[in-house]
Amino acid sequence: MKRENSLARLFTRRAVMLTGGQLTLFGALVGRMYYLQVIESDRYKMLAEDNRINLRLLPPPRGRIVDRYGVMIAENQLNYRIVVVPEQTGSVGATLDALNEIVPIDEVARRRIFREVARKRKFLPVTVKENLTWDEVSRVAVNAPDLPGVMIDVGSSRHYPHGEQLAHVVGYVAPPSEADLTGDPLLELPDFRIGRNGVERVYDLALRGKAGSSQIEVNALGRPIRELERAEGEPGNDLVLTLDLHLQNFTVERLAKHESAAAVLMDVHNGEVLTLASVPSFDPNEFNKGISGPLWRSLLGNTRTPLINKSVAGQYAPGSTFKMIVAMAALEAGLVTPEHRVSCPGHMSLGDSKFHCWKSKGGHGGLDMVEGLKQSCDVYFYELSRRLGVDRIAEMAKRFGLGAITSIDLPGEKAGLMPTRAWKLGATGVAWQQGENLVAAIGQGFVLTTPLQLAVMTSRLVNGGYAVTPHLTRDAVSGRKVGQRAQQQFPSLGVSQQTLAVMGRAMRGVVNDPRGTAFRSRITDVTMAMGGKTGTSQVRRITEEERRVGLRKPDQVPWKERDHALFVGYAPVDNPRYAVAVIVEHGGGGSTVAAPIAKEILLEAQKRLQEKPQTPMRYAGGAASDPKASTP
Image (tube, rainbow, N blue to C red):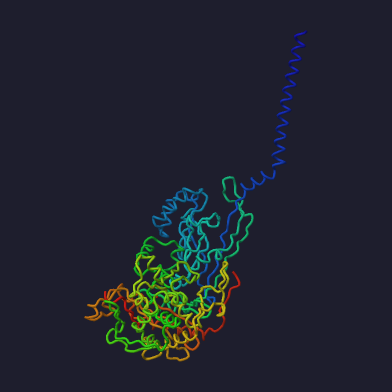
């Protein structure tokens, strides 16, 4: 009996312990379930939704670019492309072989496709080829039953309808590189493009717009089931340029008659650039499509440098177009008056060296300053530079925008070079020599300028002496205040009106006086008459032997050894509105090659003003014994 009671008590204790354990476990289970389903319910609901819903970014339409009158320069067009879904093909290789019979697919593209197929999930589409023609789209559609897994997809692509005419200004877009990735998921979209050059690059952020989004319901494998919600993004801002497409095309056609050239036309009062041309050029559409290796290598290897915007990045000795700077420096320093006369025998001796005038046989005889500029006498400016010294010449040059970037809204602008005594000592460790003053005075030696700088110099010369700066856009875009500007907003250069008037008389005479170096290029309509200055800069030294036997004709000299031809001008002379700078690389003489081009540009610009006098639109939306003697 005693033993039975002991067993009963033991059983009871075990039953109680078991029951307690069960109750404890059940309580813990209930508590955990309460914690997960009540306290943490919002969190797990969000995680479940995240697994069920994929949020995808939608690239916004890139802002359009138009000229001053609204003519389209850069736009978005439909991009038809072939995509393949690997799981629907049976064999990707066989499908590509069949597709190659309809639309050619090169080996490089095939390798890329197979890499993407291996990297992505089998139900995700892989792009095979983009930018299909309508004929190619039709052929694929007709053969669709024999092409399992192949579909035509439609996206958006940047298009430049005027191609080479505007490539250096507008630039182009291309896929972001790894260095461009900043964490913005928009940059990681496969079809997204960013500005790589020109205004496309400068105003890239404003042109991009803001991304939209799409909520896609997916299954556990990530396969899309349906779209739940879609929010379109904001298109990028439209960009209005100061360029006149008609004048741009007109200028490019004139420059294209030469192997390498550049020209800039700008409004002397507000700094608007109406033409900025550089030839040869390239087609920016090739970069958007994905430029081929052979084409890229041909562009890089072209000795005429089509990828360089010569208007802002080409650096050239300005030759005699620089002589106005020397003349103004001498007048403002009070060293001479406009009546100061110099006798030109065809050369100047300095020590053991002879510095020739371009008219070395007989020279020009006696000249005052205006005649010295009209006939482009080198000896006259040799004499001025001996009195001035290079530092005072450099100070005046910088006032007129030479030797410094203009800050135009384009990438890759070069500063040129305006040497000083301190600069040479620091750069070479050698002191400045007196003979170098003479060389600098005729725009040779170390002096380097860009065509844009020469256009700015000319504008400041003829607008009353105001420091106008060039720009390419008409509105405030991406934080850059550009818009139209009045003359009084630009500071004065501090050059006397008497000095500017002397330069005006001289530049008028260069073109309109029979003794002027550009007389043959004058505009006969007096209401549109132009003024200007010719320049020819040498790229090699002329030896005494060459002078003795006679200089060769330009067509007898290798292209790379020919002189650069330059001209700066403005019109109309009575009320200046436009300034132009033209350079033809290795073109020969400025008076015979560059001046006629400038005449045509200025004449067309004035006719254009008469045809379209209305205010351009504004969007609300979105240059031995003989140290480089200059010739006119």
